[in-house]
Image (cartoon, rainbow, N blue to C red; front, side, top):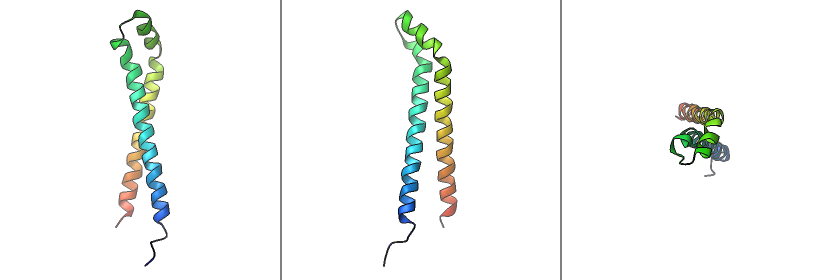
Length: 83
């Protein structure tokens, strides 16, 4: 018996979901590192530099959370479609 026709579509959707999750985790980690760096850095110049990059850190963190929410919504939608 041949495989269902939507199997390649499911594989592609699964790969896309994994990519969104990877992007979300990566962006969130970058944001956290940038935001926490001024508190961990030993040299004053690095603390000043990372303190000025706080806006970038917040943007990366929010973007990572948004990717995570998108991943969750895709998974919930896929779970509702399955019997």
